[in-house]
Image (tube, rainbow, N blue to C red; front, top):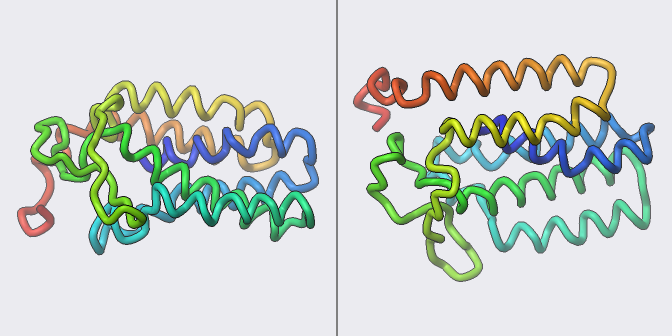
Length: 183
């Protein structure tokens, strides 16, 4: 789920936000946007166009390096974005495929590796987006962010948890409600 990717990004930056709370908002904004950004390729070739499970690390590491050497709201937000986007793309391989009904296991394509020029196979540890184990993982990953961030962010996180749970309850039914032209 997109919310699980966001919560993963927030969980990664939560310890940093705890240590340097003056950058908490920048870290949170970067992590949230980075957790969502790869899925903008839904209108192109999903899990290929904006997903970089290997090459993304080549962007995330230098971004973190710059943030360590020259910490500012901008460098930390960019680093959080890059790490969350890479983590999103890399973690898509532990789930099912990108099809609308991944529980049918019709494809062996999880996410495209641009470095090797091939699709990585789905490991299906999380059977599909919105599976009960996806919702549980999302809830667990939201915990650190709820403990560290303040202001309006906890309300956003709780809202995301609500969206996650609702999506998990409805996920398998959504395929039946999907118009044929989207398939």
